[in-house]
Image (cartoon, rainbow, N blue to C red; front, side, top):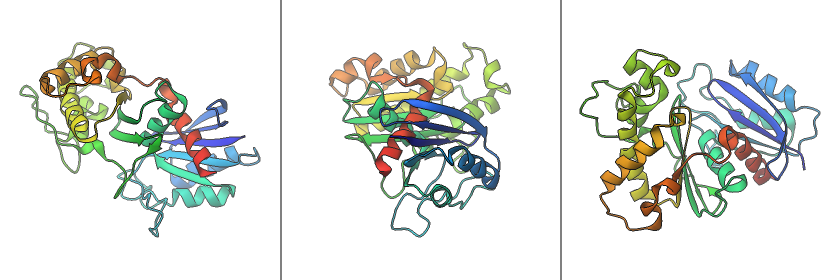
Length: 288
């Protein structure tokens, strides 16, 4: 079986061809430009290669309710030129194959439970902390959506007493994304992310905000596994600090094997940077 996969990010589109076992035959990356330019390049990559279906994990917000007239559209994104773009329709018409669409972070969660080390997890929460912050949640191997898809990056958090940064979110200022994303930390420190020292106190702030958020996610969703991905979580300092602060906040309230072993409960992606693109392969399988 030959399947197409797209991980559609605000900075780049990753395009790949693989199979139902999650194996990738071919993968390239193209910059995200205007919809016309980017989607034309994406279609050109897949045309004539005999894919049977296409899976897409994309930045959003997305309309994922099949009963809506704008099903498959990118909706109110702040990314210039991309609001109200019929992403699914353009790809479906261009390739004449079934297409399945989900948010990029939901796709990453699906990749982990279908092809990664977490196949046995009944409920998996995947949080990515990078240019933005998003969350995807799977139940019994399927992506959970409701009124919309989860927008977990906009959870409100408690301000760290030493953090005077007002927040970067254009909607909520000091929500999780506004305080803990990569761009937020660059604005807070006045430095590019790669130049911020490992021991800079801003990472204490981010760890505190992430511990706040994880406590809320755990108490609300009760996931059996939590995966933290994205560039900001790539710092070796982050996960141990987040686990420590989470344990302090929970204060022994939940008595479960997971809460007694946070090292194996709050983990990094087993598929590394390929969670998203392999999740898109899983979406393509579902489209069939």
